[in-house]
Image (tube, rainbow, N blue to C red; front, side, top):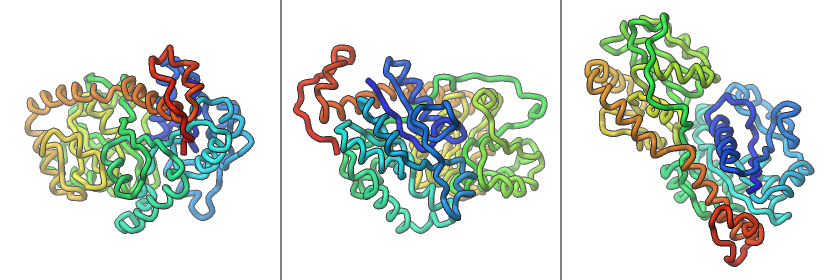
Length: 397
């Protein structure tokens, strides 16, 4: 297939959504597909380069979150779309709105993903507790982008249920983003800076909805605070606040962004993983951590998909409750042999989210969209993918 991926941000691997998109593209290519990208970036990244869209008032906040919005170039979008067998839109902003209009005009099949939880937006302006506002954003996304889609990729059943409740009427394909095979069970001796410490790790954007402050407070309240070394891997607008809050800890917290190779080694040296986020569509960072052999403790939030990964109550704590989290951390410190046993169980469990398998499921979604819109296109490669090409055509969207 000739697959066009359209994303406001793709070439800067500084947040989980972008990293997942890059892995997705790499795996699609490994499966023999041709993949082209429409996105922002620097000259030479792609022939379909979009300029950055500056957002009045909020541009500094958007940049601090590690995000970039694209200013649509309809001429380039049309060129890219004309090449493709299928177009896949990653996020529901202006680039997707324009791109869908062009794909519909040209009769090119397309699908969309739902990667942006409304709470990710409202939490950035401290309004995430106003659920009516989150519902309005769901409706805006639907009216702006998703009402025109017949196939939507949902990374978890949790977010698919939210879309059903919000009245989304497309076919929802629940497909994990998939765990990079580089994240596998591995243990390393601790580096000198961590030697002799119990290393507690959390990975994620340093922003309000991730609730790193709850973890900092829990470590401070632990019976083993003097033994714990906290590492918050990420970047974001709350970095300075979190560093200030962590000054109370007996051992100075490490708070910074880690490249993939560094992160792999960090997971291999760590003893426990905490995912304190109150809202999450899938939580790839948590999945990568337990794939790498870390037992997770997860916030039991009704706005997050991550509790689905808890084996039992020992892997959960009450959301925003530092005292409860401290108790769970203490439990796993005190039960080392049990922790080591469960580590291996989690690493084995992670295999069900194999990246290769997840991408194959996405490919089948693409074929279904093509089958509905351009059965003659599917016939060109049906022999290779072993799927039918003789079903009646219907206009996608």
